[in-house]
Image (cartoon, rainbow, N blue to C red):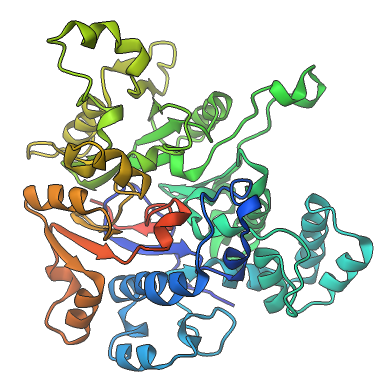
Length: 480
């Protein structure tokens, strides 16, 4: 069982040095997505599993270990790469890296399934939402915890027989919950495709010994009040909230996105709970167009440094429709606008919300007033603010970056124009393969990296519509 006697849960920014996170390596379910079901399972395309595993995601694991748990990998890189069995990356194998800093969610699930009482309850719950027959339920109860964890995630028995749909979106661990200070706000997904992963997350956070000391700090969003009794049940807006729409920008301030996946009712409940439990004092709600292109707020902006943000121009004040100097800029303003609408609520002053004219104004306010940055606030725009590369590269997650420490971010190597924009702002760019070799050979130390964009291979991974911000659920960051 994965245990750490010094386990701490604390995230109070998007950029503090990352010390512990929750991830899920691509499993066999990802390789079972078929074209006819791809959009139902929230994928735009089918992806090649072996390429994602061996040529892309594995570099993410290596890099995380070098930064967060170097004893698991330092001096072993050559042997790890030479071992074609990939046992180092397989959660069920004896040679798995098994880190309590880079935590694999499948191991946590296996751990809680060793408790027969929890196992019975979770099997019953999964079989209920997946409409399994009684004999299958009995078969699952007789399955070992290790194998059952795989089945619940991949949807397949050990003989490769599929018994229910996979949950391929579990690689995007950001969406199962968000750590806010020493609380965890659990996801309430908008789409049925994510119901099982939300269920697994609840059982893990409420039952795994790692989180025992924080059990009172696990927050669930309640259902809409008796929505099932109202006429037109399908049309009633439900309480939904996904982790990609929540950003912890300071100890007292959270941003929540009102998006395609996070409803106004869900946000309303989240604000009430966060204020009632004294989690934060301030919540800024950013409403973005409810479009598949945007999905969550972390697909259109993320933080790089206290004073640096990467953003899609279309939701900000920069706009190709003009600067107001031509009549068409005014005549078409309402029709072409995709600007974010921002409303800020402060505990005790909910009746008098503050509004910001544009997203840049909100982010600048955070940098200056919440994070006390003394440097000029800078914005790096997707595609270097050039059409059509701005939209193309946002689609392949140019704005969805993970800060592994302040100023050091991971992003896809395919977003050339965005990377050029980073260079123009003084950032160094280094491919992950080159960086790993330098770290292994002691030519470079992680402490030496500043203002750096680490490019990650992305040919297949980017087709899943999620970047490294999506593929991480930080559990612990150093204070800034």
